[in-house]
Length: 192
Image: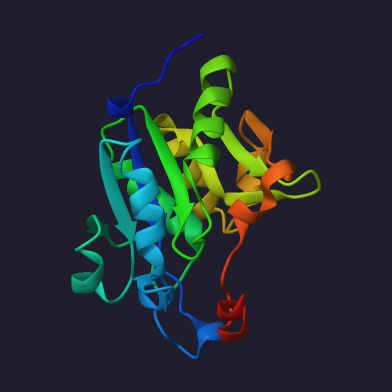
């Protein structure tokens, strides 16, 4: 077993969306139970990683309170893989933890499960799976995947799950605690 220490992991929190389902608001900065959504991912990740990157395309100053802001290299809003690509280029750790900015129920259990699976497998990516589908924005990957991801993006690819399937990817079953994967995607979701 290859023990992975905190010093070997950087995190990227994906906050670069348009917020179209939120009336154009920057989702990571919307408050939920007195905290901006992004704070939940940051608070869970900070004890498990050595550096936190925030992938954002606007509100850069606001996001800089939570980590080192990175802006992806692709024009417009090209999706989460563009943010991951930039994070892979700037991170100096062996592993990159990927988390969304809109999942306030996340806790350290999920991160521990991803790290533990990576320690015992020969995978390039360990990703949360609910027993039926992959939840691609909750993943731990080796940081040497930059070239593979850039080729995928250059070829027009944008779907995270499709790129993951092209790597040695292990699915981590989190069906016993699905609440950790809860995304707040619309104003109605904030009422639970």
